[in-house]
Image (cartoon, rainbow, N blue to C red):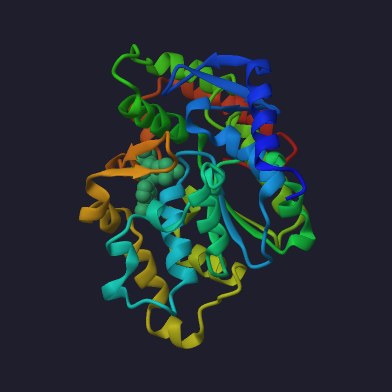
Length: 326
Ligand code: A3P
């Protein structure tokens, strides 16, 4: 390595006390690094810094990038199933016995310990990783067009993201901490203070990259995927260089993958109903928390009209001139 792990660790430790702090959603506080908010207890910030110096991309790498609660679990399943469809029978598919998070690791945490470092290096190509990191924080050797790495990004209406996130965080919040009210979460979210937020900046970073390099970044929307999954899974397959053949189309391969990865199917599998998903030595989440309703527009059951208006206003301001609409 050009710089040793020990040096990177020292750099990280020196940095922490210098970072701006704000109230956290799940743990006590969030730290701001290069414009984005990180939860120190998840070690993702450590991961972001280690990746800068130690990650070696391969031209065949596929990276699923998301802001939390926008459809990460679903897309992990869909990309995994699409990418590996030649290797598995649907009746005996790994998704039936291992959850999407068990099959597609977050590369945000691969530099936590020696085991994860060597296991990601030993993965056969093509590798599939997920990340919550904003585009601007990824190492240049990954984002540069010559790396060959491809990104699939999914965004979701911020009102549904806020509600999904608040409910998820409330379930995962340690009992010792007082509840975080929806009003408080709303204020934090609007000010951009949320994991890997500001949400709008996260989305815009990948949106712009997708406009500049459409062959490198595929930009998807949760709502479009729900509305017409067939069209989007086809696009996804083409984008990762594995288009469905005419025969596969005739045999209903696209529909089969969609059914396998549907909310109804995945959320009812034993493997996704119980137990904990461990992401790093510090973070483990109840697997069932990744499946709630999986619907578009559930925010209407939680947000007041005023809250909705304010979020829409922020979206209008932030997305102005970008060509993107939620
Ligand atoms: P809701 O809380 O609105 O139900 P992430 O995977 O990024 O953490 O996002 C979680 C959200 O995606 C939750 O939204 C969850 O219910 C939904 N979800 C999980 N699996 C899904 C699937 N197979 N299809 C559609 N939505 C899914």
